[in-house]
Image (tube, rainbow, N blue to C red):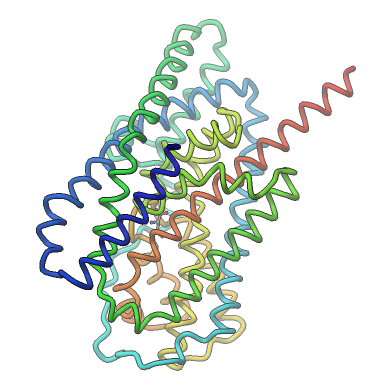
Length: 411
Ligand code: ASP
């Protein structure tokens, strides 16, 4: 049986087991979770997280060194960031339109009096960018600071390109390191079906179904927006800009999507999404290794959708009318908030506080959606990483075209 089939079966089995325990034997959940589900999920999560920092370092360094020309890096960077910004803006707009059309906050009753949310201090986005240059690269690696790690790796790759044959040994070493990491990703993936089963059983088994019933319409709007964005924006851009069959794109990337779904973390899924994009979607390593780690850090369309829908939902529940100016502010701050969201579970909700405050909505409203956010986080993380892969495919195609053109011109 193919690994991706096994993972999908494990996902469904985990969800079914979670639902059944929740419905028929709730008291059995705690022991089963403690001794079976959580350990299975945790082992898998730790195994893939173990590979994130070395993979990002080896592959970006190698990718940049492999490009051979700093101008090319600038061009790929500009295309990547433009795609990220445009698609994130589209994502929020889809979320806003659906939330306005379906009005999830006007059906049912919501307990706003008891809703509360302790807003944690969200990292200021501007500061994150100012701190992009790591004063201590080892510390950046130890803390898993992605943006700093990316910058450091780009510098090393650039240096290797410039020094050419002088650093041949180092280049070979990095190549072997990268090879080794990719081998380990494949090895760790063999455990994925067990891990995803455990993660799903924990996530679904621990849900309060009452909360889900009350928040049903809000959840439907978010899911619908995620779905439309994936099909229309990603499917459409892959078909039009990369001339690739969108069905093949989604099918090829499915193994990474299922892992993103079960881990709810773009960062943790990174080793797998890169591996899958390179193997199944034929994205060259030099492009995948630059676009995907950057995307896992700053490109969160699924998160932006949730933030857009949640803002309108909270405005509707509290009976606040948002002006057109306020909506533009929502779009701008949600783009920033999703850029600032780290690729780990639940952070999108913390950053939502920033969007709400920007238009004077009560941050306590987050208390209404926090109970069901775990499930939505799974789905939006899958969308987040799919956006990175779509970008990688498109950038790869446009770079390949350039090469083709220059070959024909020189012929
Ligand atoms: N869990 C999301 C991710 O890792 C971030 C979020 O929206 O909370 O992509």
